[in-house]
Image: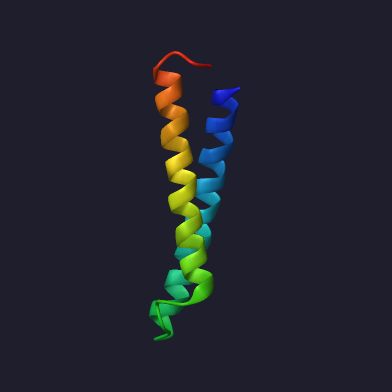
Length: 65
């Protein structure tokens, strides 16, 4: 169960990073404000996903599956 959760989290993190990278490129190439609500929301989502992934990895390392 946790290994399945880890895989889903990793996939969602990659998807979110790709989305954030596209937003960031648009921001810097068009001299837009880096701090906008949509960009901040995707950053927050990535932080939450990475935290969850860290918890899952710790549980797996401790022998929980």
